[in-house]
Length: 211
Picture 1 (tube, rainbow, N blue to C red):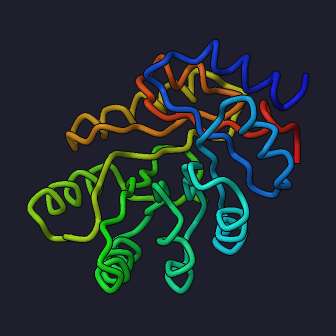
Picture 2: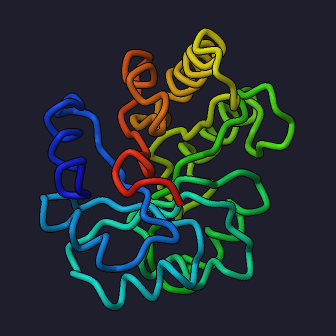
């Protein structure tokens, strides 16, 4: 199926209250425009300079989500273009985003990345850390960051019971923080993520094909 066909199928299948982020990292601008023409407006990128370049070239009503690991020295390349930074995975990064945003006089929407997977290679806050940080943010500690929710990645496994357990744990963290958004679920497991409470799903290969 074409990119446009894939987008239309997903839009018809995903509940209307769940936001679809088309993961366009490494994909050419013509593929993004094919999805755009089919009605898609949210796109996810994981390289700051690539996102900045695409944001400059492509329609201004695109909502860019930064979904990759963000180095502090690249924050300046992301803040001007990202509608949402989904991958705030450390206190150091959160503080750096707040400081950079203050210099620009801009409040930046962010999600806290929470580690719920079995793999130690995946980054993010421990669940109890995320809850504590959310409370500090609600008290005004990071005035130039608006925490909107939680992002999580499940264990890389074919065992969907493990995946569901990871997503359930992420949902518990989101509920404990009182934050609205829960970004989880990708091409192979997004239906389970939606069942477990995802408000945002990040889908790449099911739209654009394998990299």
